[in-house]
Length: 261
Image (cartoon, rainbow, N blue to C red; front, side):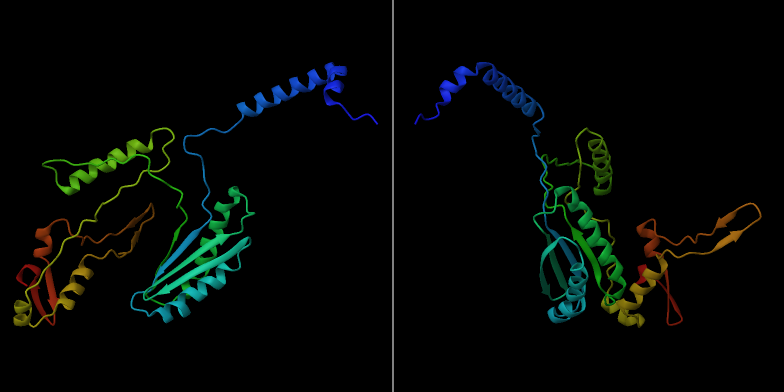
């Protein structure tokens, strides 16, 4: 019995073998030219974190009133693999993990469904709950970090220049995200003398409530005319520290200035 000899068969069918070799080479060149090449390849991170704050609540209250409600709603999602949650005093964290067979192009739609379903029951959460907040951008990495400093510039002025630089960077081709790290919101701290408050018969809560009421933004109505509607705006916001010091406080029938206390 003669065994099959591949070399002998190839020599007898040289035309066919040559044709197959040419096809394989062309196929390899075609596949190589279409091969995706990126310095930073895309990577789909398959985890979303849902974080909710409930200040003042115990871990058990957070679990029963926040975590359990959110988990039951998230479990209605299609393609859900499992949930992992942590309930701590004043804080709830839920890790949402989809099935591994979900295509990467459908992950963004799944995260949208998570936001939508939780938004449907947000009004049922206890008063005082802050959030929920969603984080599905674990795969984002910073490739370049820039530090800004300016001698003789105030913090507000420096931040304005940094904001302008950020806008310019976002216009650079292939730049997808540009975040500011270490920024601080502008605040003005009003410190009171406990001795002075006692002399005037006041407390810090009353003064704080008066300040908050003065700087609030509320609708003042609309003037309706035959030609147009004119919205009314009440000017009451603070524009300088001197305005805060001169703010009159009407407490218990008496009038005080913030600068007096």
